[in-house]
Length: 348
Image (cartoon, rainbow, N blue to C red):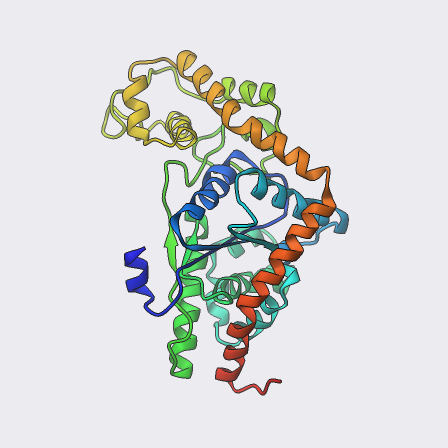
């Protein structure tokens, strides 16, 4: 926190992050995001967690599914230990400042910056990019608005989102330079933990994804205990035992599936991958996988059960989102008003 304060003096330490409601939640979402979000509540920093439904519609969404998935993400937040009394939880579209600031930042950002974004290239690969929505191209500018609208000083991000955060920093710096102000902080990334990037259970070189056609490639937060255990037992591995060192020629450097399972175990247990290797050195996967399955069931089953309870009361979820949106707007409104004043817009 001291280094963060030095990086952004004069700004209240504040964490913001969001998850897109575009499908089911996986173990990767839990270890890479939700678990870390909940832990940040204990660090004395203001935490704001958003369901980014405006980002979701950069590609067409069925309206009923979008509503359901927005509530499901919220249920996952709550079930993972994110407390609406300690954190702000809301859906993006309820705070109009996200769209308003995004337009201002669209006029600061450069078109070339957008075309260089890896995710845009990936999502339009092999297609006619001109047939993609304008929102898909401008997505990173809206992400910058999400972050800067709250003068966010830190954002927990996975490696795949780091480029977007770097763009946010560029946009903030250009705005400050163009208008001769020190108004927006230069937000710092938080990339930490044993499993910030959880890989597929079928291919350790690919990220675990809800879009993978094979359900066996991932553990869903809605999976029951038997399904979780079965997927781990059938996870792809190699015939060699676990080594007694993590790196080096005799380690896990060239064994992506093995390393992925070790990282998952470490993240679920809250220890380092080195600690796991020391405990299981020389063990075959016939020994390691059942232990990992038991651990995953113990950690994830309560979350699944809690999500199911929350989803049975959508009105309560909507109430939490509404209250969170009011609290978020109370922070965002004066920052947006000052932004407009800096730009030269006349307000009420």
